[in-house]
Structure formats: C-alpha cells, structure tokens
Image 1 (cartoon, rainbow, N blue to C red):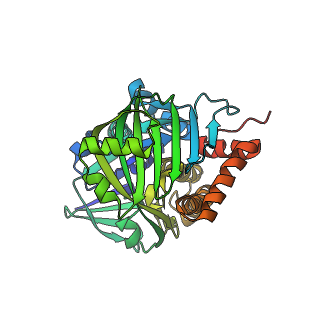
Image 2 (tube, one colour; image 1 turned 30 degrees about the vertical axis):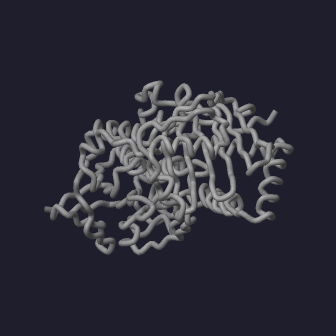
Image 3 (cartoon, rainbow, N blue to C red; image 1 turned 120 degrees about the vertical axis):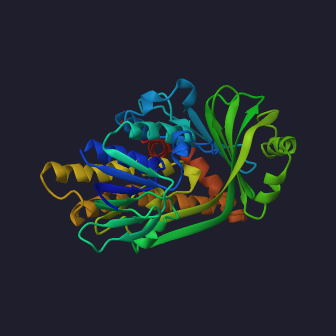
Length: 396
C-alpha cells in the first residue's frame, strides 16, 4: 500500500507535533510516523524533565492553541535566577527587570507539553498519526521522497521531515552527518520537596565534579538537576530514597533545609549534537535531530519550536506565492536562518560547559571573573537576560 501526503514527519515528540500542527495550518495533508504506541502519546509518562520555556516559546504555543489549554498548576514562573561558582559567596543574579515581562520564563513538565501537543494534533483533520510503527527505509532519489514502514506500507510526500531525536536514524539515512559532543557526564533529574522556600528563583551551582540546579515548581517543590561524571552517576542512582535525599541536602550544603524525594529519579547522558546541514533534497531536520543542546542554557525545546516555526514560515511564503514549498531554495533559507539563530549559542554553551566543568585553578578563576563581570556590567547582564528569556531588553 502506497499513501500520498504533502508532508511526512518522522517522530511525534514536541518538535514533530509542533511542526505537524504548523504544516496543517498551511492547508497541507500531514502524516506523522511514531514508533511509540498511541496510548503513550495520549498520556505520556513523566520523564523527570521540566522544560524552561522562553517568552518566545510561550507565544508560539499560544499561536498553536496549546498554551491556554494548560492548567495553572502545570505552569511555574521563574522570577529570578542565580548562578554560583564553587565556594564563592558571589552570585550572578538575573531578573526580568527591563524586559517588560514579569518572569524570566516558565517551567512546564515535558510530559505535559507532549500531551497538549498530541491533543492539538489529534484535533486536526488533515493530520494522520501512524503509531506503533517504525521507519525501515528512506528514498530521497524519487520525484517524491518515500518512507518505507515496518507495517509494510509506503508513505510518499513532497517533503519528509526528521524529528526523531538527536540520534536520528532518519538523518543518517538521508546521508547527513552531525557533530556529536559527549560531555562524559550524566544528568540526574527528579522532583523534591524542601524545607526552605525557593521564592520562584532558579539556582545553578557549578562546583567541583558536579553541577547542581534548582528549578522552582509549586510551593516548596523544585525540579532538582544533579550533573555528575559518568563514572559517579551509578552510585547516586543506586542510593535508597532517604539516603539520596540526605546526599542532595549535603551537596547543597543545607541551603534548602530538609529535602525529600518525590517520585522517581531519571538519568540522561549529556551529548550535544549539531547537524552538518538542516536539509537535503525535499528533506529537512527539526528539533533535536537538527540541534541537540546541553541543558545548561535550557534552550533545547525552545530551539526546536523556533526551528519548526522558521521552516513553516519559509514554506508559507512560497506556498502563498504559488511556488513549491519543498523546493531547495525554501529549505536552504530555513537552514540559513535556523543556523544563524542557533549556532552562536550552541558554541557558547559548549564553551561555557567546558569552562564550568574544569577543575583546575585557572578555570576556577575564569569562572569567578565571568560572574563578577556579569554583575558589574549592565549591558552584559542585559544580554544574558535577553538570551535566556527571548524578550527584548529595555533601551531606557
């Protein structure tokens, strides 16, 4: 069986479903192929990841009719952020003053975003979801690219889009390479209650052989992020729940008082990815398949959503003019724009991670100097806030 669509998307994660909804709004027939069962998409399990959304991403989710469907208990504002280096008492303090916004950003759990985007996609008559099915082949040589599926069916489309993770098999099948940087670290994420209030402030603490983060959720509950060298992560994960909580208290030097683990712990190896190209003939990459960020700057999903919008925008301009929305020049324009938006921060993030995970005295001094510069120079702090929030800084 051979089925024809305008757009075929591999991967029903947040980036894939976002682009599916955007392509549908252009009047295109869309197929989304996902190896997970539909029941998992409809009610995704908690995976420990709480996503820091920029103001730009919030506006994007509003345009997708997703944001207003979230409950107030599912959205946690980040009013302020503090960064600490080692045992130094100096803190780099950031807030939204001068941006015109009342928060730096908003935290929403990844499974909540996935569920909301699935529901929105399911409401679109022009989107077909093929779930519990894997892609076994990709043919980009034909006039219309074709996906061979594990079900035995073939999907052909004017445009194929890969949104199947930073380790994208579809990207490999298209012959597009990627730079992968393995940081040799594991990120352990969980939710914990704590005795002392977080005051809706996010904390990032770079310390010797570990990075700690507190992302403020409801009341006295936070998403805790512990990044350790890969060799040390198994021992932390193997601790009994009470022992783990005591260990986290110790790592934070008692700053949050008594702490208690809620739910499970989740571990993610830290690997950053940047594709050599974001397109081939009638083929494009979005989400982590294009750019997989280190989470320290919290821009992973934000970049994925931006890329989906950029691609849809380029397609709309050409389609409205009566042209071929999947032509090379359209996809090349997407590549150029998205690369310009992501590559500088990708490089800066990797450099910062290298600096802040270095254990030598020169690295410590450099980190300390950067924090002091950030506090002392308003333009530098303004730039940091703008980068984190994607709000326009005040010019007054």
